[in-house]
Image 1 (cartoon, rainbow, N blue to C red):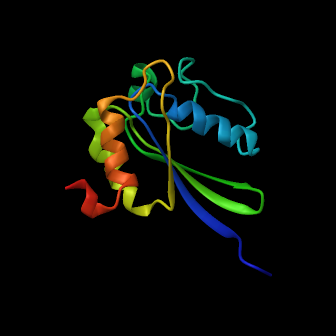
Image 2: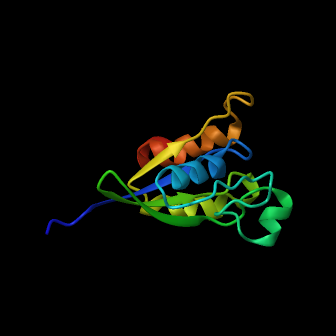
Length: 127
């Protein structure tokens, strides 16, 4: 039996861009979740700590596992608030790829540009 391909993917963005909402939708569409939760309803699967639900933001990076199209995915939802950047940065070294979410209404924020430099550019280019 052939081993499944495994991919670790992280979702990065500035605060309130929709990272957790996107992660929730991916888990729901993959069949991992039977009910689609929402951050504003305080019932999202990944933001399960009470402080996160109260504030409506991700504070701690979370992981979820799901299979899709014969591939096993480890999905990492990261905090977007600049105060929790160190929590997000810790996940960067384990990612195979990253999804950078941009809010259509907010546009590119300063923190978005920082995320771009941290993950997407070679280390020598960030200096």
